[in-house]
Structure formats: structure tokens, C-alpha cells
Length: 258
Image (cartoon, rainbow, N blue to C red; front, side):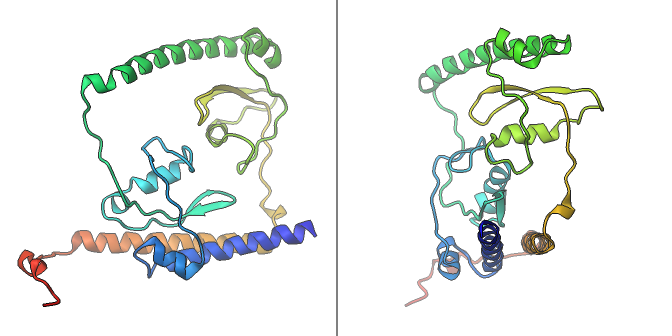
């Protein structure tokens, strides 16, 4: 019963994503899309080039928001897959360009940043010492205790892990896998600013054949839909760039209803 419910939910999610991608071709604002798809429009504020809630530091969302077509031209983004259970389309309604502030406005911020940079450098130095201790043969947990760090052992991390910080997952899977019988040490920063040293001891290759054929076919269709929408948007943008457009300011200033 649990498997059937999960499969039904996955199928419904894929169906909604497909409906959302189809709605992109006709809608020019999110409210229209919401009416045609039955989905809800939510508003996020204070989003910067470093990210922001509710998307965290998702690079896919950051790239979409700060794409010129979305940021400056008001276009709706393509469907963005944040993780296995979340996909969104985005439209920017208000944008505040960066501007130089007076020294008085940023004095406290500069002081805080300098202190933070110094603290981070100290943490990184301790991280290097920690890694050196492990490479010299000290057990990972023992080295963590020596450096007053929290150690979590024997963790299986999947690409779509929802219980691990996405920034950590991203860097784990960017790290070169260790040679047989060896380990690989690396460091990263979590999306909340924690300094993390991780050790990869083994890599288990993925098994696509273990995914039900119907699920694989549904994901293929979803990818084809997403690529199709992206190609169409790119084609339209290219046409706009190459088009020779003349605007009559006089005509635009006239009241069309007189």
C-alpha cells in the first residue's frame, strides 16, 4: 500500500510538472499559470546572488533568478527542479540593483565581515590540521574529538539525500572518488555557514535498472519536456536579439481609447 501511494504521488508530481511546463508556452504571468494549472503562487523576498529562503543556496534557482531574461525582461523561468520533491517556475516582480552605500551605513558590516573572515581562516587552519592528523593515521572520530568537532560516522549519502545539507551533498559528489582501499578527504561549507570536513571511504555505483521502467520513462518524458521548453525560450530570445525593432514613442504616448 505504501509503495502504491508513493508511486501515485510521484506520478502526480510528474503530471503537475508536465502541466506546468505546458502552461509556460501560453502564460505571461504566474497568476495566469496558477489559474490554468491549479497550483499556488508564493512570494519570496530578499533573494540575493547568494540565495535566500525558501530555496537556500540552490545554484539552479540563483542562476534562473539572475538570468537577464527573467531579472530584467520579466519573463517566467523554465521549470526548475530544486530536489526530488520540489520544482518551481519563477518570475521577478521587483529588483533592487546593487548600489554603493556610505561608510557610516556599512561600518558595522565591514567590522563584522573582517571578524568573520579572520574566524573562518582560523577554522580552515584547524581543518587543515584535522585532515593532516587523519592522513597521518589517526582515526577520524578521534581526530574530531581532539579538535572539539562533531563526528558522524558511517553515513550513506545519496545524490537526492533530503536529510543532508544540499551544499554538502553537492561537494561530496564533486569530489574525486578514492582509489580502492584508500579514502578521500575534502572540506566544504554548509549552506548555514558551518565548516565541514568529510571523508569518502567507498563509492557505490548507481543502478538505473533498479528503478521501475515506468518511473524511468516518466522521468525521460519530463526531461524532454523541460529541454523542449528551454529550447523554445532560447529560440525566442535569439529571435528578439536579432530582430530589428522600431518603436514609435509618439504612438505609445497616444491614448488608444479616445
